[in-house]
Length: 317
Image (cartoon, rainbow, N blue to C red; front, side, top):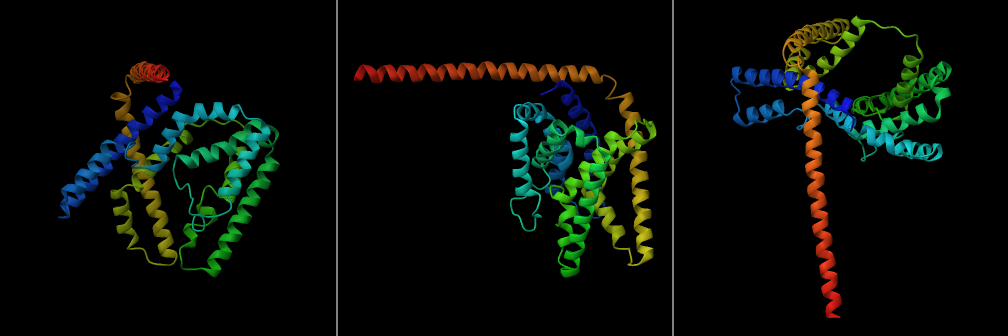
């Protein structure tokens, strides 16, 4: 467990608290105004708002934070493997998970920390053992072409034969563990890492705010608002334009709220960021020392009992 990873988790947790309390609180208020007040529902969403990480309110931040905590151990373990052993694990994972969509494969890892570990094992093999390919933009173009052609063509065939049974939501391109998604993702990573270095504060700022958009639209109040507008959409070009306008309006609205959050946090909870991290790190170390000492005492006690029982059995004999 690295100190930097703990700092990232703490920064993300503060952001989750802000959006969870705001969105879940708004949802409870809206339900109350609509005359649909429910004490159990309010208590349920209040608990999830106060404990967004523990209650897995959003799968992605929760899985990402858990992955940050175990990433050093996972990296160290994979580092002990040879290229052949690491490659064998990747081939086994790809054979098990990359070819069958979830509709046909009940052992689906779904959206969880297992998906992070699965992708990390595959991507780390390319980065550590095939560095020449990770610098080849030709290889990236080939991967991108394979992923797009394979994914779109199979998706097209499935939709032609099964137009109205929901396969679109479960097949290749909507399943991140499947082969087309992996090929496209690795290709995009190679394009980004081999591109000329360009730093833009505006782009970084806008990219950082996309998480806030995801947090808002996937909460109950976000789904409630979007569902209300979706009922007013009519098929055709007008509906497409309306959806695009709604996407832009939602993004800009959440972006403005996130700007306000940054400004408030910079003057309040982020003023003593280093002191907060020092306290959290020290608390974790003290907790580790206490647990380790008590565990050693417990192990010693068990060994003493085991030795005494062995001696008593020997004396009886």
